[in-house]
Length: 406
Ligand code: PMP
Image (tube, rainbow, N blue to C red; front, side):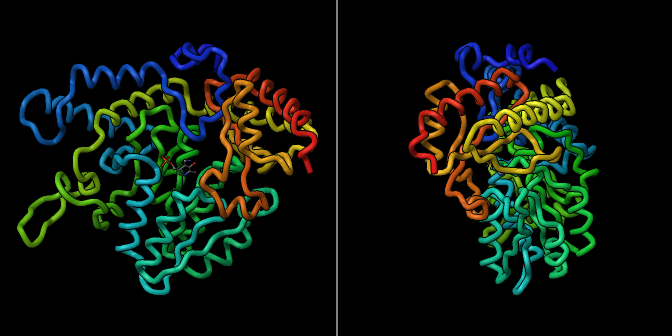
């Protein structure tokens, strides 16, 4: 895989030729094929879906349903109706926490999460648990930034109804052994929800092989437009769940007093869906399939290995996360005594775009003993030279902030 050739597919790098963009974990840049698919759809094929009986609307409906099939294929399921379109991973988690909470949670039940979760995979469960009188428990992490699997056994002994965990940490880069965790959770009787917001853009995913019950993705992090993401679930589980949002489009029969609901996936897509963006997301999935997810994964890991080696040479820099093969293209770091935002601003002024803050993972940062970190994240369009540039600017930052470093 040649990232220099791939870069030519991304117009943003023509507009900003010197930009070292290391913030794809927040949101990824878009290839021309995605931008063009969106523009083409709006210019030539746009009409509301599932409503009109005229050819333009029928063709738009077909394009939307074809996008669903493409996303199903990308996630490794033959059944397009297992894919529900939502706005983003956050909406996907809220849908699941609401619907699974209504269906399965009761007084005294447990929802199990982990200490490394993004707030999107924590706060919705807290709300569901509060409504139902259930409680939240979290699998702790080890000092190396991996899940503490011994503690997991003990926590699964409490027979949680739901186990929701991330495939890849957006702070530590840790890739969790999803298939093993899912199998253990199922043995304990839990429903398994996987947050694939950082997984799906970077790793080959086959939801059935992973053994998950639900898998949440974030479209804008996998080269797609904002506003459309695929949420996968097992057909038999979708069928049992009540809707989240209600109104037009998701019903079967409505009277003034009550309504019956359409079968999945329509039941979970109230109102006009982001169908143009779903078509754009399918173009993103096709682009990734064309490159090959195994190649993307290998490339991310090579850049990560290079970054970990180079950053270990920067004096005083604390680098977070495991040192093994089980991590993807996210590297968070801090100089003790230097505010994460100051470091990110310094890097930004030198043309290196990174993110700083708690990265929507406050419990994890508390566990790490820092208020905030600065994070570089890599994707298919990043090069080894960009990683070296990051390291070089961090050496400069070390000299610049020398008197602050504790
Ligand atoms: N989970 C993880 C692990 C994430 O990194 C993010 C995005 N930072 C989300 C969930 C939320 O994704 P979205 O922006 O699509 O709601």
